[in-house]
Length: 296
Image 1 (cartoon, rainbow, N blue to C red):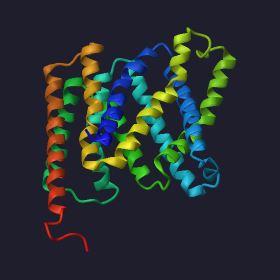
Image 2 (image 1 turned 45 degrees about the vertical axis):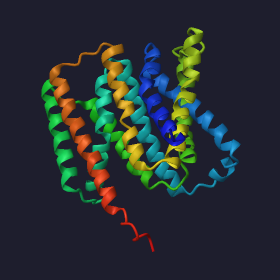
Image 3 (image 1 turned 90 degrees about the vertical axis):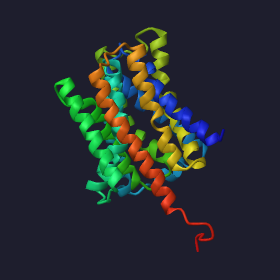
Image 4 (image 1 turned 30 degrees about the horizontal axis):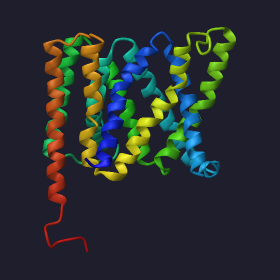
């Protein structure tokens, strides 16, 4: 199997399985878990960027570029926090829905913000996904806010990163660096109040908190390797590994309720994603030059 496919599958599998990791930290307040995740991730990324000899170059980043990454940092902080809270509070199934509908949110943002035009099958996919979400709203008695929050924050993050000029690893380091100082200040404040968990709990919790940097960066590195080796169309298929694993973990491991009515709502979303994928394949084939009509 192509190494890029293996790296991509590994990245999305790790992202899906992270629900297990965060659940081990469910006794730690979400804000503390997130602050540690930012600080330790920044440390890991700083080491990687420094090892590549690019750390000095990032010191001269223009203010406009820094503003783009500050906005990206805010969005990814919202996404990370909401996800960690959801999986430690018994909402793994709903969090999986958020990542299932993220590609369709990306399409919607493309239409609204970038004035992109959708093909007929893409409109059908969006309509089916909307029907599924409306059905789940009726089932839950309220809109699936967690799923909406995850999909919107990550979709908007992707939109911002679309215009970001730095390499992925450099950009992620800059994002965590923006967040690291307030995160570190927060940890020092709660430590002064005597509410800090790190080094005041069992050793396993300390190691898990310190390991948040590695489990955050590792799938990102695998993903970066994958996108360099395989077409984005394959990445588009692989991305559904993560929410599928999350959904299975929610049902099988965490024993969350998943009724036939919920299954119906998810089925609408899955059919929408299938249509969206088929449309992408067809569009790619139509755009491919005929034999003998290569690029000039």
